[in-house]
Image 1 (tube, one colour):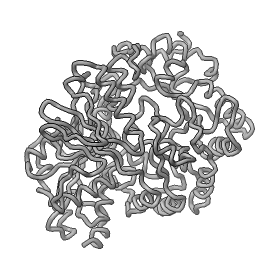
Image 2 (cartoon, helix red, strand yellow; image 1 turned 135 degrees about the horizontal axis):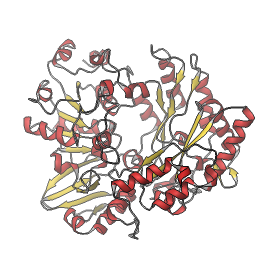
Image 3 (cartoon, helix red, strand yellow; image 1 turned 180 degrees about the vertical axis):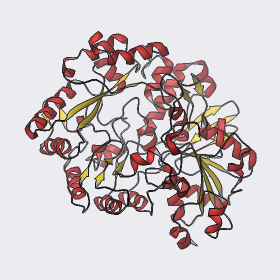
Image 4 (cartoon, one colour; image 1 turned 45 degrees about the vertical axis):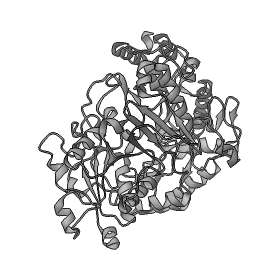
Length: 576
């Protein structure tokens, strides 16, 4: 049966499709807020392929209708093992609303880009429906929405503290982070009739009082956090510290009638493990049910390749480390090259790899020189407030990877579309080593489409400190080096800096100072994002509490009109 499953073109999404495979039962049914694209960039596809490799029959129900007679939730019946639920590639609230809390008019993860095909708080809505229809079937939630809401968190859209999504949804088990190993462990445990409570990288809610034990940290209760925002800061500081440790503690968050337990994660994946995931038989196509329909997200990712997981940048507003972790897990060059070789035979490939990317494009292969020091470290960032002296920052291996990619027959161009951390190859005195100089030239000359995009985020030191970003002086060094390369190569390229308005600590005067910064003269300022507080980030904690993580008061622009003014002033530079 495993061979038959492996030979299937695509996972079934209906009874007829399952019957065509000769299935008389389904092991696992995954409900997702996104259209189904069988691409390794899709968490649903990755989990489905991993479970398929283990011999399980997996079906997918993409974007089920939650507003009718619930036929989408009934059509495949009860699976043999469990239901899986995710909101899609984004938190459903970020997907739905702007920073001004206005409803978005489109959705890149839906056929035709149409909005309205998933509910607010999709994980909770889907799970409640499944538990109502099938109360005896376990529901396992995961993906970005569940992962970042695994403990109490601030919800910007309702402007209040939410409990763990486990309580609101009623799910039996939550998987956080990259879910290949925990979901396999969950499937095996359910199949064997074992408890789910000891599985790494999972969380659950339990009635009663938590059991004491070594390696367990009891956080402030949810009721205490509601009464005292400083208690929320205390909890977040512990959660962030443990999320950035190689050997984390078990976290216990008490509630009035029980507790949420978050088990420590699995160790970082080995190169061999990651290679095995990306080597699975992805078709890299949307499901045949969408034939003739355009899915904007697929157009963005169809020719992209992921080269590693994790990010040790530690930006305060970013969710990557909380979900993927800070330790870099890189694929082998051979695995990446094989994927690109397969890509060149796809009918949609025209010779251009759109993104040789990752959470941060130039962290490939980077790690601590002394592994023991990393194993006892709890810093959230290896770059802020200063670069860790134990960190290997050479770009030699990445340059070698780029050369191998460009040597693949059929590849004309390979762009770097993901973000680049320039503090990995520059300091105030210039390049860190010979490979740093070579790396910037290589990216600008051979892997840039004309716009060299970087993210200084702000110009003012006190705001950058709250963001956990380097001094803006470093951007000035980068711009000079970029201009020198562009002039030498006679390239009409532009450097495009990204900025954030209304971040905690940022006032209207700070945005005016940004617009007048002399290092931005000659640059058309057009890339700005109004800060949106997202669950489980330091910035959202500051936004909610009005304090930094040391409990010092911080200015917060909460008024929607005030946020709009900060952003609009960015575009009216000459008026300032």
